[in-house]
Amino acid sequence: MTPSGADAAGIESGSSQRPAPRLVYDDDCGFCTWCAAFAAERGEFELVGFEELTPDQLARLPDDYEECAHLLTDDRVYSCGAAIEEAMSRVETPSRYLAAVFQQVPGNETVRESLYREVADRRALFGKLASREPPARRDS
Image (cartoon, helix red, strand yellow):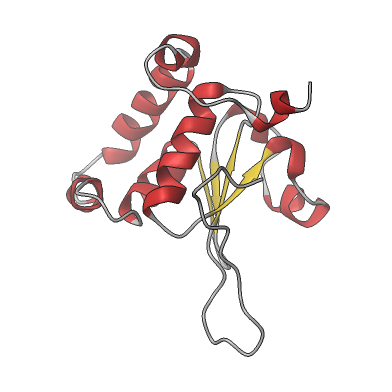
């Protein structure tokens, strides 16, 4: 499900463009929904909540996929901090420059994953600052 204002771009018939990467997120989390919508409103992403994953998409994800966000491209799967870093490098904001610089820092993977886990483990707190109604809760 794509939040209002976000474009779930794909391949048009006859188009040579690649499909938009799929940003997989916890669609039962207000903060996660806000983050996914933020990215989609500023870049080319198809948003896919955990509840909407297809069998093919699930097969590409790690067994513990519900532990973090993922970015699926045609040829790669980015998970957790790597997914956010890659998404940040694809948005039309200054954060893409920060992501590019950060990718050049030796040992950045350790810092990136630690930061990701710190934020992910405090989603309820961050959700008080930035949140959107999660798609999984809209029908309830």
